[in-house]
Length: 623
Image (tube, rainbow, N blue to C red; front, side, top):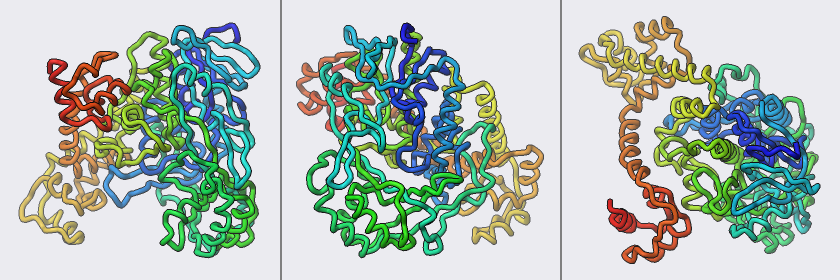
């Protein structure tokens, strides 16, 4: 293998690296996955869960394109919940609790069963670069392995430094050493780097907890699943999570250790994730609150190890232990391991193209936390896109990108390379201006045809999507063309306190009322008969309901997206000289020169570039 020239080498086997390696190999590229420890492929370094608000949409998108995260999430799930079900469908977000050990095992088995994919265990200490183009990697053992492209997915390992109270030591994850050499080489090549921080809570022995004092958090009564494929099945049994709270006593005990906290004594200078703060940060920032929620999450079907969600901390271990013992239900808690914070290097993502290829070194791609993101799902989606584009580049094919109105993945990457980030970036539904279009239920309709064209989504997957689309389309047409009599629909309307109708009319009009749901109109004999005669499944029924009830919102958002997307087709020449446009603001010229947007639409989203600056640019380009 050392004499081979690989099409793609993927460095790191976390969520980003695993998706990158699978994508490149499945697209026919000879791929090598290099990682420091093959036993830790797709390790869940933090919480044992996949999905959540906006993150669940990303997992669905990965699955629709032909990635593996959705499949593994289903096969290793111990609980399923559809979050935000009380809100509109744009907000519905699937989430699973995962069996941590099974998750990693299932990922490894999928990767080992992937053709064109080799594995090697070693630390990558540097890159082989010639004439501003990557040509391979160098390992800790001094071995050089040649490649036509390289994807870096180093996670928290680049010069990683772990903090527990007043102790600190090098490491990329508890029990694993940090990676050195890569940051220094990239900086020498002209890259800008920075430092970020993240943290994790203690893991405890579930046998030492009193769950009777906590509130049970069961999964959905009728659980769904992530993958659109029928090779995975919804859960038939589930494990519950539990919830308890901190208290003023707990907060006081934690404060006793603040002078030994690396966050407060100045030893940690980098920024952590704003929306996933440590317990000490929550106490400090929200001093008026007398308690905070703690979610007690089992780490698998059979293990007694438990994850204390909401108690991320880098306080000294004795302070962590003393404070947790004052939490209701934790009076006799035993630690498996304390929580810790970790600082690591990242590279501001404005140094990347939309393909995630670096602007300075051809054939070199960054994905995951190296780009300043946080979260398994964000990392996995970047890995998928980097793996796809590394493979396409080697095959001399056109690059693959997703626009903001096509996928949350498109929003994520556009935000990163256009706006950059100075703190760990996490996806939220509020970041997407077209979230009514980017729902979790229609990710297959949006992206599976694209995945099929790439060679990632199978013909079976495409056919299943087309059948679902056609069945929903016909059912919507049924609502639009079928009438219902007053005597049949009025009893239903009365039960829902909705105004009765005086004459026969199309069911579509009645069903479009905000308080009328599918379960209500199924009381109409013709509707229930149509469902039974056509053997419609839950996905088709749900898709039809959304298309009927939100038709106006969807059409309006689609129209807005179409108007704005016109600027996506106005390309800006490479290395465009903005300094010559004197009527543009100085700030805009500087930002545009640094980021080098590919289109006028991307330029318009850069912070500091005004609508007037865009007008000047369009005039200068002859538009």
